[in-house]
Structure formats: C-alpha cells, structure tokens
Image (cartoon, rainbow, N blue to C red; front, side, top):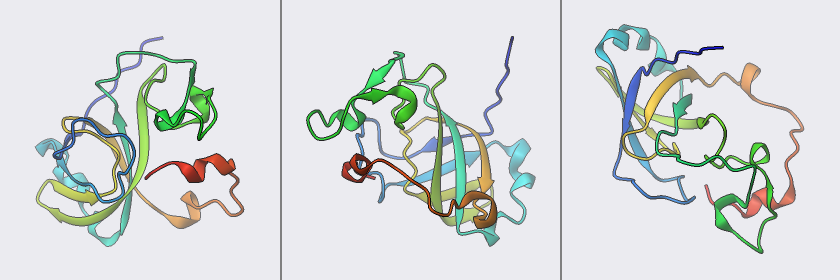
Length: 145
C-alpha cells in the first residue's frame, strides 16, 4: 500500500539537538501560503495538536530506554514511549498557542527540532481530546517535558 503525506509547513526554532525539557521551547510553525486560509478561527484556541514527521530519525528500534534514562526508567517497546525511533517517525504533540500572524503560528512546548515538516494541526478540544482517569506508568513522571 502506498501512502502519500503532504507537509503543510515547517517548524522553525533554535533547537537542533534536544533530549527532553521541551516545555519552554518556542517554535514558529511556518504554514505554506496555500494553507494560510485554513487557519481562520484557529486563534480562538489556546492549544493545538501538532502532527509532524521526525525527518532526522535514521533508525528503527524495537525497544528503547526513553530519554536515555538508563537505570531511571525501564526499557520498553518503541510503541510504549514517545521516542522517535519508530517504524514511521510520526510525532503527535500538544502545544500552547502564543500567537498567530499571517501564516506563522508561534507555540510553546512543541517537541520538534528546527526544520521538522509539519503534517497537520488540529485544535485541542477538551471533549474530544481529554481522557478522564487516564493511566500512565509511574516511570513516565521521571521524563522531562
């Protein structure tokens, strides 16, 4: 089966190498001009869900220690962590909207490096996106966001 993905824009920030600690990183999402009218109404939202292609990932791991925290967190299957070394390195993250000007969305806490292709964005909508009584392993609290 062939799947075609289209980038709607690109991420611009000062980060090239980063391992956790994304919560204060500011990123501009530069949306391609042909999609700028699709941003209408987006400024009414405080957060976005951003879907992106982790284009610099060169390996595919079956198991991984999240954030390299050997001895602090367990080795888990790649699908049990947010690490990029997956068969299809697609990332999904929620980020705070700081501003929208023309075709540039400025966000905080998006875990992407400079040059990352943006595949899609969706407004964060609590009745669709919040999970009551969500469960995560205790070790997840040791990761740095």
